Image 1 (tube, helix red, strand yellow):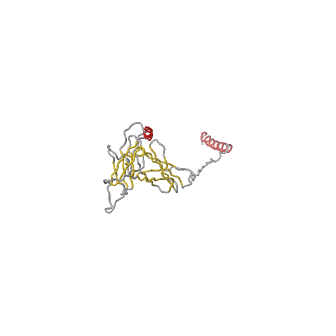
Image 2 (tube, rainbow, N blue to C red; image 1 turned 135 degrees about the horizontal axis):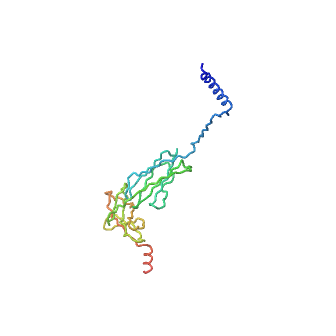
Image 3 (cartoon, one colour; image 1 turned 120 degrees about the vertical axis):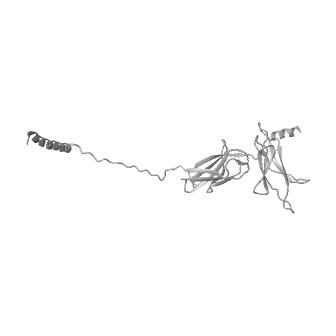
Length: 240
C-alpha cells in the first residue's frame, strides 16, 4: 500500500470524528412552532345585496299604481321592510313602516324625479338596518293645454289632470275640479283645493260620479277652476 493511500485512509475517519464531535458540542435547535389564529365569524356582519324593482319601468305616468318589490340576498333571517319616497335631491318620507311584506304600492300624483328607498332589518327589534334606494321618473298625462280625464279601476272614480300654469315665480293660487251630472240644471260638486305648481300639472281623483236610475249610467261634466292666491283674494275683499 502506498503512503498516499495510508494517508487517505487516516484523514476521513478523523474528519468524520471531528464533525461528530462538533455536532455534539453545538447547541441544539428547538423544533419550530406554528400558531394558528382562529376567528369567530358568527357575529361578523356580512353586507346584504338589496334590490328594489317597480312593476312598470320608468318613466311611469301620474296616477299610475306602481308596485315596488324588494328582495334581499345574504340578508337577515327574519327581514322586515320599511319604504320611503321623496323628490330627487329632497327629503324622504316614510310611506309604509316596517312590515314583513316586501312590496309597496305607490301612486304618484305629480310628475317629476323621485327617490324610492327600502330599509331592511332583522325583525322588528333589529338594530342594524340596511338600505337601498333607486331613482324614478314620473311623466305628466297632460301634453297640451287641455285637461285630461283618465278612467281608473273603480268605475265611479276618474283621474282629472289640470294643465300646468305658466312658469314663473309663485304663488300661482289654488285649483279644484267641479263636476256634475250633465243637464240643463247641473248641480256642481267640488273637490278639495290644491296649490297649482308652476310648470306642473295638478291632479285629482274625482270620486262620487254615481250612475242614475233607471239606466244605471250617467254622463258627467267636469271643469277645473283656478282660484287666485289667498293674498290676492284678501286684498280684493278689502277693496270691496
